[in-house]
Amino acid sequence: MVFDIVLKGGHVIDPKNGIDEVKDIGIQGGKIAAVDAGLPVEGTGKVVDVGGLYVTPGLVDIHIHAYATPGNPDQWAGDNSILPDGFSFRTGVTTMVDTGSAGWRNFADFRERVIDRCQTRLFALINIAGTGMTDIAHEQNPHDMDTDKTSGMARDHEDVVVGIKTAHYIGPEWISVDRTIEAAAKADTRTMIDFGFFKKERPYYELLTQKLRPGDISTHVFRGPTPWFDAQGKVLPYLHQARERGVILDVGHGAGSFCFRNAVPAVAQGFYPDSISTDLHVLCMNMGMLDMTTTMSKFLVLGMPLYEVIRTSTVNPAEEIGHPELGHLSVGAVADVAVLNQMEGSFGYADSFGGRISGDKRLHCELTVMGGRVVYDWNGRAGVDYAELGDNYGIRSGESRIMPPA
Ligand SMILES: [Zn+2]
Image (cartoon, rainbow, N blue to C red; front, side, top):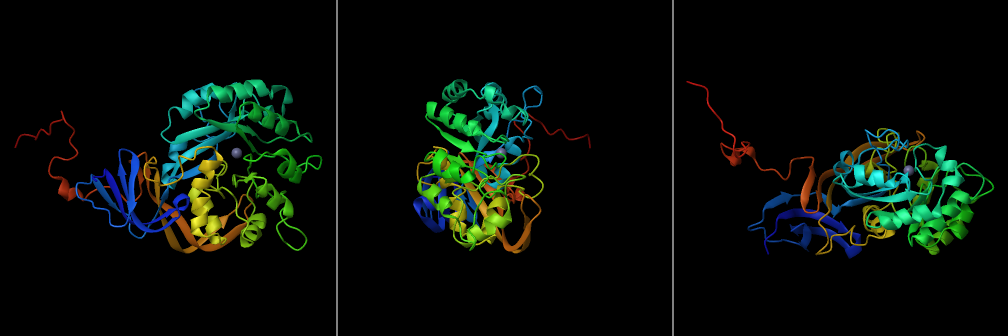
């Protein structure tokens, strides 16, 4: 077998297939063609040495905000969106999910301007509020939470829509949650719930144990007001019950939703999130959250095994959004691959509120492959020594190098 690319000598972690050892990855035609030790490299287009590094499925971040649409200020998301390609590949992420930046009124615009134009594989949840996150006030308006229009839009764009979202709801009623579940049921899809402002009239434990259906996602699970522990400091039974019911507990770090006070004891007790996600937007891209590999590193230094950190950043989130074809390195799967360096040293991490921990590990993305193409290469590993390229490299066909008269 002849490969387009071989990633040689890395430690492969592929939880879907139970792989946790040094193997080569052979890529051909944009797909994973072989995963084995000592793959033959004769005739291979490009052999990339990834010895000493971890090779994982392309990371899947199911909570980001990407409706940044310069040129259309009436519709763009007020939720401080970013454009995906500037953040995804450099952190090993090949698949992202925009979580409700657009609603049914502006989803087609979002799709045309961002989803269909970015290189990152971008899916979306549609906000139950008609114009999505254009402003927080709008997300409070129950008169524009139209379950028929929202579910219709989800069905019309079912190739990219993976669910319905509500966020930032302030009022004491359940209406935003109820309408979101209703719209999702009509479109035969899942919800992701940002529970907004925690109110005594609608307790979070009721959301998890009564409202949400199996497969529905509660994001921001480590928020400050989330009740996590009993008087003895043990994880409360309702969280175990929610998980047994099939409710998904997602990180959604963001600028106000990740608190070490909750995460540290939970992870210490072996209660891990189902998926690690960033809630990437402009308010957390430079402080606290930073990026996907930093968010993963936090769980690593809290004591979550690397294998589980990779599981909750690849196969788990892919399956949670109904895309089981992603998040693993099975032969025949699309060749989305992240190459990560687990650095040893002295590092510090901040949560969303300036709480800090220190740790001796940090994950750093070295190289990213998407659909069989190298899309990020921090150390130029996919390049070759320039001196081997001869005298004419760098000159495109049709160009001439005309020497000045002697
Ligand atoms: Zn968010």
